[in-house]
Amino acid sequence: MPLLRRCALSLVAALAVLLSVAAPARGQDTTVAGVRIGLVYTPGTRPGVLVLPVGGVAGDSIRAILQRDFTYGDRINVIALEPSAIPPFGDGSSKPNYPLFTRLGAAAILEVTPTSFGIQVAVHNAGKGLVERTKAFPLPAGTLSANWRLALHDVADEIELWVTGVRGIAATRILYVSEGRVYQVDSDGANPTPLTGAATAMSPVWNPKATHIAYMTMGPAGQQIVIRESGGATRVLPTRNGLNMTPTFAPDGNTIVYAFGAESGTDLYATNAFGNEPARRITVGRGSDNTQPSFSPDGRRLAFTSGRVGHPEVYISDADGTNAELLTPYNFGDQSYRANPDWSPDGRLIAFEALIGGRMQIMSIGLRDRVIKRHTSEGVNEQPSWAPDARHVVFTSNRGGTRQLWVLDVESNTVRQLTRAPGGARFGAWSPPLGSR
Amino acid sequence: MNRGHRVLALSVLALAAVSACRKKPETTSTPVTPTPEPTCDQRCRDSISMAEKRRADSVAAAAAAAEAAARERALASTRATLAAAVYFEYDSDELSGDARSTLDAKLPILRANAGLRLRIAGNTDERGSDEYNLALGQRRAASVKRYLSDQGIDSGRMDIISYGEERPVVTESSEEGWRMNRRAEFEITAGGDALVAPR
Image (spheres, rainbow over the protein chains, first blue to last red):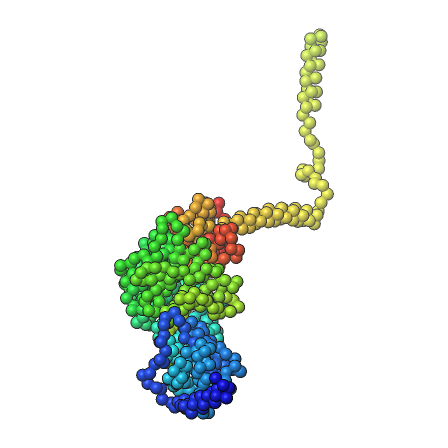
């Protein structure tokens, strides 16, 4: 068509676009209740999310933290653009370049505005070309402090819920042991903080509400289990003298199951975590070793490691020890060694470590179909602990030289390094969600 | 007088002379005194007896030193025998023949020292689960204690503890290194000062 008519047509089109702009619903404090982001989430695909540059003093940090949380969640594909590559818009007089962003792969566009109390978040549906959800999130004072970061991680988790239908795990922490002390670290590796003084600690665990942790400590007369509340006060779990180890809290938060050994093997016992009642025996190992208990999320079943057939394997039983069955089948004569079970928070899988070709690797087994999958191959990989999303696992690996914590996505088997502790790190334990709900 | 009488008189005379020669009674007029010593007064006698005493003392001291050195060697050997570790096969708490011999050597010492108390510490190599290895180390220590108490040592004199894989003596990741770490160690917790070597 002739040049003049083409120009006229595009001018008209541009005018039409400008005139048809509906100002985005920014500045409002009310959530658009009941409306989920209208994205069709297909398992196996990752919706593209573009985070617009964030203004204000902490804007760059806010954008970086949100983008990193989405990336670490493995459910969102972050369209990471340099701010200079993003056409600016603001003042409510224009809207994002939806067609451009859609072409770049974004299904959702995240607009974050700092306010006097925190941040205002608007999520645009790029395909539909409109804002689908807004919410005001308060953030505590102390920009970039541990509490501030946790609150921002909680925002990322909720946005992930809007976009993918699954809540993120950024607002969590992981316990570990380095040089004999128990530490906690944020899910993105920030703020490694010691929780105990110099000692020989092992096997830290959270209680279901994350108000307490338990761990084992080694002394001249043997090992004891210590319960520490988040404020720092500790008490020793009253048990017999000897080897007391591998504590775990039941989902009810009151019962603690641990392994005790003296002169004839090691067995599992249960007692009240905050009282003083005689321990109830759970396993009768007859001289074998039974350790590393892990509850099913409904509290009705236990997984544990037992050497009762002559070498360690993973067993499951009722919470009182009855109906014990072998979970990890083996061929007689194999050099089989399976240990360290951790039951996933959705009840479907048990992660464990298994000796393969002379080295431990992280495995999982389905409770229904008993299908075993292998998740690692580089180096020695042990001590799996599930994140609340039942998809990520923190584990100990020596693949970088020293033992450190790494995080695995069991769906894609991708890994990232979590700790870089100078003295190494072991015994990772992933917390329940720590933010508000 | 005739010849017979003359012989008889001469014989009598000879006999008398001979007998007179034989007996020679001392007849002096000075008083009887003991045989005179070499010339040495009281001071001289004191210094002699002191020198003799010094000689005797140094002989005794040398003998005592030799005895003490022998005692020390025996004590050192006793301590070494007590401290000698026993070793285990992979993933096992069974006592081999060598292990039993090492333990048997400790028995006379334990019998000779009633106040002696031991702590037996079980250890593992680095392979396998860290926590499960604590349980294995505990079984190893318990196995040693059971053997010694079966040989008559009061089990109240022995404490057990496990260090799992947490206290390796060798950090090398090799068969040899692992073998040296799979051990039970012995520590005296009482009665070590008064330790005597068994006869």
